Length: 320
Image (cartoon, rainbow, N blue to C red; front, side):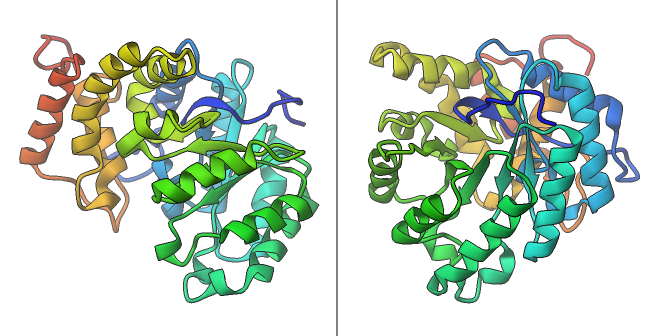
Protein backbone atom coordinates (compact mmCIF):
# COMPACT_ATOMS: atom_id res chain seq x y z
CA UNK A 1 0.00 0.00 0.00
CA UNK A 2 1.24 3.54 -0.75
CA UNK A 3 2.41 5.38 2.34
CA UNK A 4 1.06 8.72 1.03
CA UNK A 5 -2.38 7.66 -0.20
CA UNK A 6 -3.58 11.05 -1.42
CA UNK A 7 -0.32 12.07 -3.09
CA UNK A 8 -0.70 14.20 -6.19
CA UNK A 9 2.56 14.75 -8.12
CA UNK A 10 3.51 18.43 -7.92
CA UNK A 11 6.25 20.66 -6.59
CA UNK A 12 9.99 19.93 -6.62
CA UNK A 13 10.82 16.25 -7.22
CA UNK A 14 14.48 15.21 -7.57
CA UNK A 15 15.25 12.16 -9.69
CA UNK A 16 17.91 10.47 -7.60
CA UNK A 17 21.13 8.78 -8.69
CA UNK A 18 22.38 5.24 -8.07
CA UNK A 19 25.74 4.84 -6.35
CA UNK A 20 27.74 1.85 -7.59
CA UNK A 21 30.77 -0.01 -6.25
CA UNK A 22 33.94 -0.41 -8.31
CA UNK A 23 32.62 -3.80 -9.43
CA UNK A 24 29.44 -2.03 -10.64
CA UNK A 25 27.28 -3.57 -7.94
CA UNK A 26 24.83 -1.38 -6.03
CA UNK A 27 26.33 0.49 -3.07
CA UNK A 28 23.17 0.54 -1.00
CA UNK A 29 24.65 2.42 1.94
CA UNK A 30 25.75 5.40 -0.14
CA UNK A 31 22.62 5.30 -2.30
CA UNK A 32 20.53 5.57 0.87
CA UNK A 33 22.70 8.47 2.06
CA UNK A 34 22.16 10.22 -1.27
CA UNK A 35 18.39 9.67 -1.08
CA UNK A 36 18.32 11.17 2.39
CA UNK A 37 20.32 14.19 1.22
CA UNK A 38 17.68 14.86 -1.44
CA UNK A 39 14.54 13.96 0.52
CA UNK A 40 15.36 16.06 3.57
CA UNK A 41 15.78 19.32 1.63
CA UNK A 42 13.08 21.70 2.84
CA UNK A 43 10.50 22.12 0.08
CA UNK A 44 11.09 18.81 -1.73
CA UNK A 45 7.69 17.19 -2.30
CA UNK A 46 8.82 13.67 -3.37
CA UNK A 47 11.77 11.74 -4.76
CA UNK A 48 11.96 9.51 -7.83
CA UNK A 49 13.92 6.27 -8.07
CA UNK A 50 14.47 3.81 -10.92
CA UNK A 51 14.54 6.56 -13.52
CA UNK A 52 17.09 7.70 -16.09
CA UNK A 53 19.15 9.28 -13.32
CA UNK A 54 19.56 5.93 -11.55
CA UNK A 55 20.57 4.09 -14.73
CA UNK A 56 17.37 2.04 -14.78
CA UNK A 57 18.21 0.91 -18.31
CA UNK A 58 21.08 -1.14 -16.85
CA UNK A 59 19.23 -2.55 -13.81
CA UNK A 60 17.46 -5.90 -13.60
CA UNK A 61 13.95 -6.30 -12.22
CA UNK A 62 15.41 -7.65 -8.96
CA UNK A 63 17.76 -4.66 -8.68
CA UNK A 64 14.92 -2.24 -9.31
CA UNK A 65 12.96 -3.91 -6.53
CA UNK A 66 16.02 -3.70 -4.25
CA UNK A 67 16.47 0.00 -5.02
CA UNK A 68 12.81 0.78 -4.34
CA UNK A 69 12.73 -1.23 -1.10
CA UNK A 70 15.90 0.45 0.18
CA UNK A 71 14.57 3.87 -0.80
CA UNK A 72 11.30 3.31 1.04
CA UNK A 73 13.13 2.02 4.09
CA UNK A 74 15.34 5.12 4.13
CA UNK A 75 12.96 7.99 3.27
CA UNK A 76 9.54 6.46 2.59
CA UNK A 77 8.07 7.75 5.86
CA UNK A 78 9.33 11.26 5.11
CA UNK A 79 8.36 11.89 1.50
CA UNK A 80 6.45 10.05 -1.23
CA UNK A 81 8.65 7.80 -3.37
CA UNK A 82 7.89 7.65 -7.09
CA UNK A 83 9.05 4.54 -8.95
CA UNK A 84 10.02 4.51 -12.62
CA UNK A 85 8.39 2.00 -14.96
CA UNK A 86 10.94 1.41 -17.71
CA UNK A 87 10.22 -1.51 -20.04
CA UNK A 88 9.94 -2.15 -23.76
CA UNK A 89 7.03 -4.54 -23.27
CA UNK A 90 3.68 -3.60 -21.72
CA UNK A 91 3.38 -6.90 -19.82
CA UNK A 92 6.74 -6.29 -18.13
CA UNK A 93 5.76 -2.67 -17.45
CA UNK A 94 2.62 -3.88 -15.68
CA UNK A 95 4.73 -6.32 -13.63
CA UNK A 96 7.03 -3.48 -12.53
CA UNK A 97 4.00 -1.33 -11.66
CA UNK A 98 2.46 -4.09 -9.55
CA UNK A 99 5.77 -4.62 -7.75
CA UNK A 100 6.05 -0.89 -7.01
CA UNK A 101 2.55 -0.81 -5.56
CA UNK A 102 3.20 -3.88 -3.41
CA UNK A 103 6.43 -2.36 -2.05
CA UNK A 104 4.71 0.89 -1.08
CA UNK A 105 5.55 3.45 -3.78
CA UNK A 106 3.26 6.47 -3.92
CA UNK A 107 3.25 7.00 -7.71
CA UNK A 108 4.69 5.72 -10.98
CA UNK A 109 6.75 7.48 -13.64
CA UNK A 110 5.97 5.64 -16.87
CA UNK A 111 8.55 5.80 -19.65
CA UNK A 112 7.56 5.31 -23.31
CA UNK A 113 8.57 1.86 -24.56
CA UNK A 114 11.63 2.06 -26.82
CA UNK A 115 9.83 -0.46 -29.02
CA UNK A 116 7.63 2.45 -30.20
CA UNK A 117 10.57 4.38 -31.66
CA UNK A 118 10.01 3.17 -35.21
CA UNK A 119 6.64 4.83 -35.68
CA UNK A 120 4.66 4.25 -32.52
CA UNK A 121 3.71 7.93 -32.48
CA UNK A 122 1.59 7.15 -35.56
CA UNK A 123 -0.29 4.41 -33.67
CA UNK A 124 -1.95 6.11 -30.66
CA UNK A 125 -3.66 2.85 -29.76
CA UNK A 126 -0.25 1.45 -28.76
CA UNK A 127 0.18 4.11 -26.08
CA UNK A 128 -3.41 3.66 -24.92
CA UNK A 129 -2.95 -0.09 -24.55
CA UNK A 130 0.38 0.35 -22.75
CA UNK A 131 -1.08 2.68 -20.13
CA UNK A 132 -4.27 0.69 -19.71
CA UNK A 133 -2.26 -2.43 -18.86
CA UNK A 134 -0.27 -0.52 -16.26
CA UNK A 135 -3.40 1.06 -14.78
CA UNK A 136 -5.05 -2.38 -14.61
CA UNK A 137 -2.10 -3.59 -12.49
CA UNK A 138 -2.36 -0.81 -9.87
CA UNK A 139 -4.39 2.27 -9.02
CA UNK A 140 -1.29 4.32 -8.12
CA UNK A 141 -1.21 7.79 -9.69
CA UNK A 142 0.76 7.83 -12.93
CA UNK A 143 3.16 10.44 -14.32
CA UNK A 144 3.39 10.03 -18.10
CA UNK A 145 6.88 10.80 -19.40
CA UNK A 146 6.49 12.95 -22.51
CA UNK A 147 9.52 12.76 -24.84
CA UNK A 148 10.34 15.15 -27.73
CA UNK A 149 8.25 14.35 -30.79
CA UNK A 150 11.46 14.18 -32.87
CA UNK A 151 12.43 11.06 -30.90
CA UNK A 152 9.28 9.29 -32.17
CA UNK A 153 8.70 8.34 -28.54
CA UNK A 154 6.62 11.41 -27.75
CA UNK A 155 2.83 11.33 -27.67
CA UNK A 156 0.93 13.75 -29.88
CA UNK A 157 -1.20 16.41 -28.19
CA UNK A 158 -4.48 14.70 -29.11
CA UNK A 159 -3.06 11.33 -28.05
CA UNK A 160 -2.29 12.74 -24.61
CA UNK A 161 -5.84 14.02 -24.26
CA UNK A 162 -7.13 10.56 -25.21
CA UNK A 163 -4.79 9.01 -22.65
CA UNK A 164 -6.05 11.27 -19.86
CA UNK A 165 -9.64 10.35 -20.72
CA UNK A 166 -8.99 6.61 -21.00
CA UNK A 167 -6.68 6.31 -17.96
CA UNK A 168 -7.96 8.52 -15.12
CA UNK A 169 -5.05 7.54 -12.86
CA UNK A 170 -2.72 9.69 -15.00
CA UNK A 171 -2.21 12.63 -12.65
CA UNK A 172 0.73 14.43 -14.29
CA UNK A 173 3.14 14.46 -17.19
CA UNK A 174 6.88 14.83 -16.99
CA UNK A 175 7.24 17.21 -19.91
CA UNK A 176 10.38 16.85 -21.98
CA UNK A 177 8.70 17.95 -25.20
CA UNK A 178 11.72 20.23 -25.78
CA UNK A 179 9.43 22.58 -27.70
CA UNK A 180 8.60 25.81 -25.86
CA UNK A 181 5.44 26.46 -27.87
CA UNK A 182 4.08 22.94 -27.29
CA UNK A 183 5.22 23.00 -23.66
CA UNK A 184 3.14 26.12 -22.99
CA UNK A 185 0.15 24.53 -24.73
CA UNK A 186 0.49 21.50 -22.46
CA UNK A 187 0.57 23.70 -19.37
CA UNK A 188 -2.39 25.87 -20.32
CA UNK A 189 -4.53 22.96 -21.50
CA UNK A 190 -3.76 20.03 -19.22
CA UNK A 191 -3.77 21.94 -15.94
CA UNK A 192 -7.16 23.44 -16.84
CA UNK A 193 -8.95 20.20 -17.72
CA UNK A 194 -12.05 19.22 -15.71
CA UNK A 195 -9.74 16.64 -14.15
CA UNK A 196 -6.48 18.62 -14.15
CA UNK A 197 -3.23 16.91 -15.11
CA UNK A 198 -0.19 18.62 -13.65
CA UNK A 199 2.74 19.50 -15.89
CA UNK A 200 6.07 18.73 -14.24
CA UNK A 201 8.85 20.23 -16.31
CA UNK A 202 12.08 18.39 -16.91
CA UNK A 203 13.50 21.12 -19.14
CA UNK A 204 16.35 21.52 -16.70
CA UNK A 205 18.65 23.24 -19.21
CA UNK A 206 16.17 26.15 -19.36
CA UNK A 207 14.36 25.64 -16.07
CA UNK A 208 13.49 29.21 -15.12
CA UNK A 209 11.95 29.95 -18.52
CA UNK A 210 9.92 26.75 -18.31
CA UNK A 211 8.66 27.39 -14.79
CA UNK A 212 7.54 30.92 -15.61
CA UNK A 213 5.07 29.44 -18.10
CA UNK A 214 3.10 28.07 -15.15
CA UNK A 215 4.23 24.48 -14.50
CA UNK A 216 2.91 23.01 -11.27
CA UNK A 217 6.22 21.36 -10.56
CA UNK A 218 9.47 19.92 -11.84
CA UNK A 219 10.96 16.43 -11.94
CA UNK A 220 14.66 16.66 -12.61
CA UNK A 221 17.86 14.64 -12.41
CA UNK A 222 19.84 17.76 -11.56
CA UNK A 223 17.75 17.91 -8.39
CA UNK A 224 20.05 15.12 -7.23
CA UNK A 225 22.71 17.84 -6.88
CA UNK A 226 20.86 21.15 -6.49
CA UNK A 227 17.47 20.35 -4.96
CA UNK A 228 17.81 23.37 -2.67
CA UNK A 229 18.36 25.75 -5.61
CA UNK A 230 15.44 24.22 -7.50
CA UNK A 231 13.18 24.72 -4.48
CA UNK A 232 14.31 28.34 -4.18
CA UNK A 233 13.69 28.94 -7.89
CA UNK A 234 10.27 27.25 -7.85
CA UNK A 235 9.17 29.24 -4.80
CA UNK A 236 10.37 32.54 -6.27
CA UNK A 237 8.55 31.91 -9.55
CA UNK A 238 5.36 30.89 -7.74
CA UNK A 239 5.58 34.07 -5.63
CA UNK A 240 6.02 36.20 -8.75
CA UNK A 241 9.38 37.45 -7.46
CA UNK A 242 11.27 37.73 -10.73
CA UNK A 243 14.35 39.35 -9.20
CA UNK A 244 14.75 36.54 -6.67
CA UNK A 245 14.19 33.93 -9.38
CA UNK A 246 16.86 35.52 -11.56
CA UNK A 247 19.35 35.49 -8.71
CA UNK A 248 18.83 31.77 -8.18
CA UNK A 249 18.89 31.11 -11.90
CA UNK A 250 22.23 32.93 -12.19
CA UNK A 251 23.66 30.20 -9.96
CA UNK A 252 21.91 27.28 -11.66
CA UNK A 253 23.04 28.50 -15.09
CA UNK A 254 26.67 27.48 -14.57
CA UNK A 255 25.69 23.90 -13.71
CA UNK A 256 23.12 23.48 -16.46
CA UNK A 257 25.80 24.50 -18.95
CA UNK A 258 28.06 21.63 -17.89
CA UNK A 259 25.46 19.01 -16.98
CA UNK A 260 23.55 19.26 -20.26
CA UNK A 261 26.40 19.87 -22.68
CA UNK A 262 26.82 17.40 -25.57
CA UNK A 263 26.77 14.48 -25.40
CA UNK A 264 23.45 14.75 -23.55
CA UNK A 265 23.65 11.11 -22.43
CA UNK A 266 26.45 11.96 -19.98
CA UNK A 267 24.27 14.29 -17.89
CA UNK A 268 23.78 11.94 -14.93
CA UNK A 269 27.37 10.73 -15.21
CA UNK A 270 28.40 14.36 -14.69
CA UNK A 271 26.02 14.73 -11.74
CA UNK A 272 27.69 11.79 -10.03
CA UNK A 273 31.06 13.47 -10.47
CA UNK A 274 29.59 16.67 -8.99
CA UNK A 275 28.45 14.76 -5.91
CA UNK A 276 31.95 13.31 -5.51
CA UNK A 277 33.44 16.82 -5.71
CA UNK A 278 30.93 18.01 -3.12
CA UNK A 279 31.83 15.14 -0.78
CA UNK A 280 28.33 13.67 -0.85
CA UNK A 281 29.34 10.32 -2.38
CA UNK A 282 32.72 8.60 -2.57
CA UNK A 283 32.86 7.46 -6.17
CA UNK A 284 31.26 8.02 -9.57
CA UNK A 285 31.03 4.56 -11.12
CA UNK A 286 28.67 4.01 -14.07
CA UNK A 287 27.53 0.86 -15.84
CA UNK A 288 28.36 0.31 -19.50
CA UNK A 289 27.67 1.39 -22.12
CA UNK A 290 28.19 4.60 -20.11
CA UNK A 291 31.87 5.40 -19.48
CA UNK A 292 33.67 7.69 -17.08
CA UNK A 293 34.16 11.25 -18.28
CA UNK A 294 37.60 12.86 -18.65
CA UNK A 295 39.55 14.63 -15.93
CA UNK A 296 39.27 17.84 -17.96
CA UNK A 297 35.50 17.61 -17.90
CA UNK A 298 35.48 16.85 -14.18
CA UNK A 299 37.56 20.00 -13.70
CA UNK A 300 34.95 22.00 -15.62
CA UNK A 301 32.26 20.65 -13.32
CA UNK A 302 34.33 21.76 -10.35
CA UNK A 303 34.61 25.26 -11.80
CA UNK A 304 30.85 25.38 -12.39
CA UNK A 305 30.17 24.32 -8.80
CA UNK A 306 32.39 27.13 -7.57
CA UNK A 307 30.67 29.70 -9.80
CA UNK A 308 27.31 28.45 -8.53
CA UNK A 309 28.45 29.08 -4.96
CA UNK A 310 28.83 25.37 -4.22
CA UNK A 311 32.57 25.03 -3.58
CA UNK A 312 33.85 21.48 -4.28
CA UNK A 313 34.90 19.62 -1.16
CA UNK A 314 38.53 19.45 -2.30
CA UNK A 315 38.88 23.22 -2.62
CA UNK A 316 37.09 23.72 0.68
CA UNK A 317 39.59 21.47 2.42
CA UNK A 318 37.02 18.80 3.21
CA UNK A 319 37.36 15.03 2.95
CA UNK A 320 35.66 13.60 -0.12
